[in-house]
Length: 472
Image 1 (cartoon, rainbow, N blue to C red):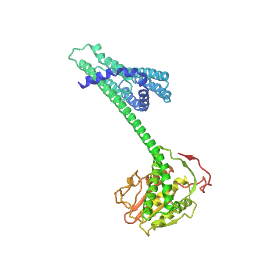
Image 2 (tube, rainbow, N blue to C red):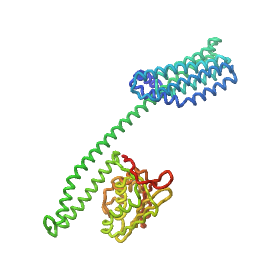
Image 3 (tube, helix red, strand yellow):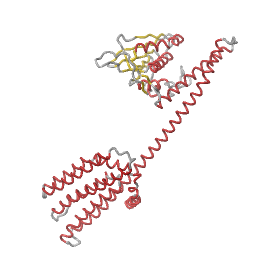
Image 4 (cartoon, rainbow, N blue to C red):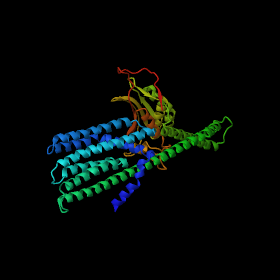
């Protein structure tokens, strides 16, 4: 019953082959797979020819095998001509389709004649060898030619004629009684033909189902891309719209705090300090959101230039010196004694280092220390930031570099933050073809490090500070 349903579905879908609008992918898949299987097909046919030549007329066997091998040349030539077809030229596509049909007829006839020649030479004690060769060729076609139903039916029809030729060969030769093994072989061949047709139908329907699944995946991918683009546009618009009024609010609060427009009551000063602090925190969040949107949209622009890693780290340390003094944490720098040139966007790398230094300070206790280093490690230039804070537990690296995540996400965590800083930093560093990672031990501290390829000329000496092209 299942086989009948498969054959009915196969017949109902016969019109798909003649729909040129839906043939582009089928033709490309057919040609690509056919080209990939040349060696396998010819290895099988060569083995069959050698085996048959040992028991039958070797001259006729190898002559017909040579014809079979030459038909592969037609397919290889067609594959080369069709590889640049983009599907837009329908006339060219129709020519390819006609060539496929012609090549299929020639190939199937050559294989059939090759096998029928063996059957003719074989004695009437059955035709197992040629029938097995023909059965193998039919199954191979059913498995690998299911992209184009019309072509598959054409090839199997020619093979079917060869099957019937072999089936009738001894019947017509000897006109045996119905109880003879010759008739048993005849009815067995008819059953095999039905079996091959059923197998071909299943492979074709499975291929069509895979195509439908691929179409669904493509549609879902397009919807996901559209949703992501809409989210990015919304996020960028909202962030930009928030930044302008927030800048005015922060400026007004700072102006009031400064006392330039009048002295404040003692009870108002602390409130304004809270408002100012939270305003700057919100501004930092907006900047992080804008950077995240640029990273995910591939719109972050980098101006790569030769940069001295020593100068880079010194500038970053200087920029957070005031924050370090406020927290009571001592920051020391250990610069590389050699020239340490790297290619990078100075402003973006300062952003990364400032973020890592800021985290190191926030997680350090008052009176603690943070050490910033530039050194050669193996074939890389390493910039590292070491603190003596509580450390990071194992197995949380995804959260450390994740979006909107922190290792301590509880309501009582010691420090605040957006959870975007290290995510953005990692994207920036990887855009420099560099690596951002860390090593940590609980109760001892954490060291974040950036590994860069050194910038050198062909002779191994440091390059001059000439501008490199900017990239996105």
